[in-house]
Image 1 (spheres, one colour):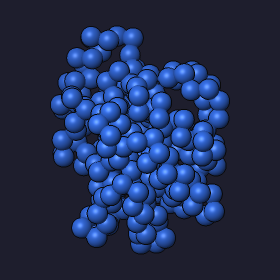
Image 2 (tube, rainbow, N blue to C red; image 1 turned 90 degrees about the vertical axis):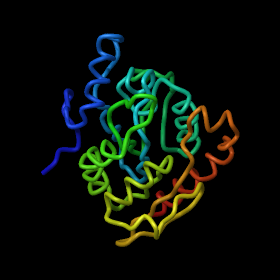
Image 3 (tube, helix red, strand yellow; image 1 turned 120 degrees about the vertical axis):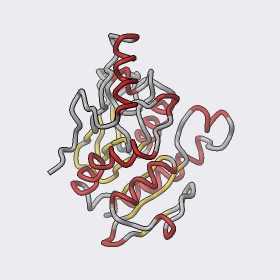
Image 4 (cartoon, rainbow, N blue to C red; image 1 turned 90 degrees about the horizontal axis):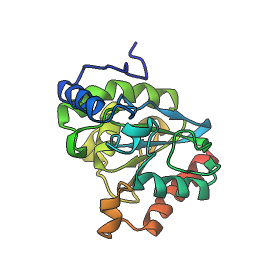
Length: 212
């Protein structure tokens, strides 16, 4: 049985392992390892992200912590009643998740924030156990890569469930997947994603998760 967490020195993806080694030399104080799942209490909503940012989660060791994406995500989760405390972009800031769990489709930081297909597929073995563990939860994919990897992990045809911001997909077995554009600074700076757009889909997914 594949564990949920890859080892600290996971070598399954040579390019990512080499990039990790470079970063350990360049930034010895960073976490610089596969970023683990952040498991909240009584999970009802599972958020699937893309991959750690170099100076975000790769630095802090906690998903969406240390870069702009986390600012928007955690403010929205607090508004949805799924996070408590003060978010200070540090792993030790005291923020807690209540009703949510966060996992990335790719656990290691990729060069230029762009994992390749083989890396996404390889890391899916660590995504699927998280999905299986929370099979009764509602899922929210942040971006197309997270959406596609989730569908592959559950054995669903991608053509049958096209990605779209705000889309809700009813999958086999009662699984529900929502989609959102990724809450990256690029998407918000270009206007592709506004705070209101992001809050809308997160709050809808959270509301359904709480009813489930």
